[in-house]
Image (tube, rainbow, N blue to C red):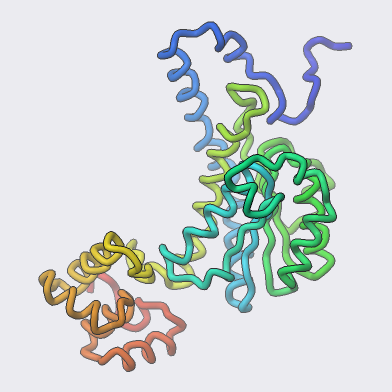
Length: 305
C-alpha cells in the first residue's frame, strides 16, 4: 500500500499534517494553530461564489413561486441548517414555514447526538414526504463529507417530487454528484485540526455559506432597505429599540416621535417608514407596500433621498 495515499479520499476525513503533534503543544500554540486554519475558510468559501450565487437564484425563484427553502442535514450540518432557518422570522419577518431546517433524529438531535439517525436514507425521504415538498420548493442538502445517507435519501425524494435541489459539502464532489443536482457548493477547507471534527472549519464554512444565501435572498425579496433590516419582528426589548433607531435613521426624527410612529404602525418598521415618509395611516401604508410586493424602496424611494 502507498503510504502517501490517504486512507480516506474525503478531505474531511484526512489527517492535517500541521496538527499531528497538537497534543504536545502549549496552549497558546494550539490557539494559534486553530486560528491559522480558520483563516483559510473565507478564501475557500470565496472560491465557490458562483455556485453560491446560483443557489441564491434558486432560493429566490422558489420564494417567487410561493415555495419554500429546506435545509437537510445530520449532526453539525443539520444543526446549522436549523439555526439559519430559525433566525429568519425574527430577523426578516418571514413566515416560519418559508425556510425550514430538517435534521436527522428530529428535535432531540439539536441538543443531543443521534449519530445513528444519519444512516437511514428512507428517513430523509420520509421527512420530504411529510412536508409535501414539490416543484415550487428548493431543497439544499448539507453533508460536509458528502456521503450522509439521510441527506441523499431526502434529496433523491425531493427530486422525484419535482423540487430543485442543491448540495453543500466540504470535499471534492464526484461527477455523479455534480450532475445530480441543480447546484453543488464545495468550499474545500482542507483537513480539520482534529481529524474528522467537521464542527470546526467545515462547520464554519457551512455557516458562512448559509448566511450568504439567506441574507442575499432576503435583500432581493425586499426585506432590507439600504442595509437596514426593516422587516424585523419587534418581539423583544432589543428589537423594539432597534426598530426605533431605524426609524430615527430613516425618517430623521427624534426618539419619542419614532416610538410613537412604531406603535401606530402595529410594531412593523417597514409600515412605519411608509407612514412617516408619505403621511399615510397604517392601512394606507400597508396597501402601498402590498402593491409593490413589500419592496420599500419602490414605495418611498432611495434611503438617502
